[in-house]
Image (cartoon, rainbow over all chains, first blue to last red; front, side, top):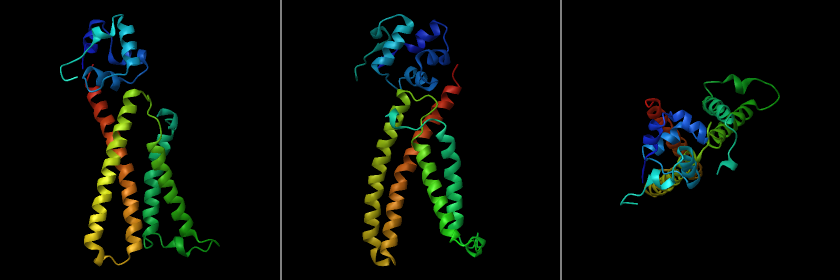
Length: 66
Length: 151
């Protein structure tokens, strides 16, 4: 699954630490999501979408292999 | 999974108790290292008490290390924990099978079968926890290093 978390974060000028603090997760989790090492849960995906004020499907995108 | 875990501060206790408990237990086993323990007449058999305290402190330390939360225990950490448990279980089964095959092959060379069995099961049991601790902390450390290079 592809995602645009890093793109959105840099566009909004937010650091990984700031985003992690706002979502109540560790910085490692943000890093793992951005590098597609980890697919977040629905709750966390919705929190990310709410933070950037866009829909979940605009951030996360299914790939052929999914 | 998080509700079965101990608070984060127990990790420090575990990191202290495990090595010191193990060193004490190992030193106690080597009676020539601390012979004064056996000869001191305190009215109690000191060496078994000392060994017992060290052994249980070692086990308790291991338990604290394994079952204490991370500073931020989020869903990613819980996923890593679960994956590490799965890998540890697989390695344990493999090691158990290997130990049995080895036992069948070398059975006629084993002097004390009972003692061999006890140590074999102890090693199989420890293999699970060691693989879990090593894998879980390795991934966490690797990610921490990668993250520290990021902005």
